[in-house]
Length: 98
Image (cartoon, rainbow, N blue to C red; front, side, top):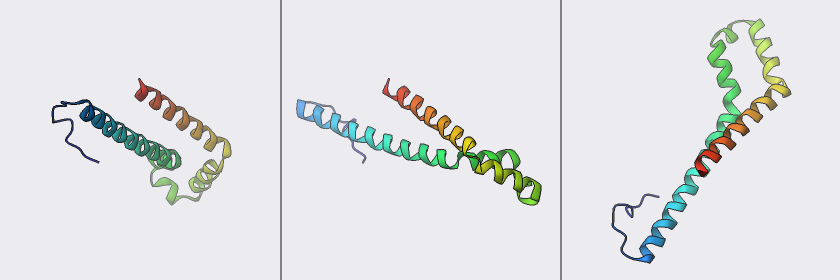
């Protein structure tokens, strides 16, 4: 939703209230999009990190494939990454509220 209300001078209380509503709607849409992006990052972070560290090596050797598969299947590792992402999301949310 793109509005031009910020470029026009506000001359009445109704126009002010309308601008406030529009900005709050825009804020809510941005928060929803940010939450979706954080959930996507949380779901894919582990695989992205492994690809960044090991690159193509994990695809070419059975040893690396075996190690990485076991590591990725570890519930403790996944839980730790999930907790890390939750804390990051909470800190980002708190920063945006200030």
